[in-house]
Image (cartoon, rainbow, N blue to C red; front, side):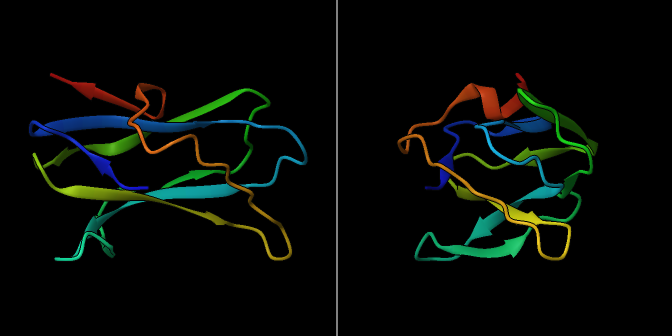
Length: 105
């Protein structure tokens, strides 16, 4: 599900909670949406790699803060970074969870 901020928001880090199973390296990034609110373009500087994910909560800081515009939909993308490795994702409703992002007001 997409993420929607109601105010212009600057984020400095992004993370995810470990859900169990094998810990494989992965990466996350943020995509802007098209006119149908579907993922379109990866935001430059939004990719974060987790080469050695931890067994609880994984968080990483962006090289430079990212400013996301109010009332625009954004998508978080996940991918494995090792050939033959799997990345499993479980969506937790479609509501925004502050545990995935850190922002400065």
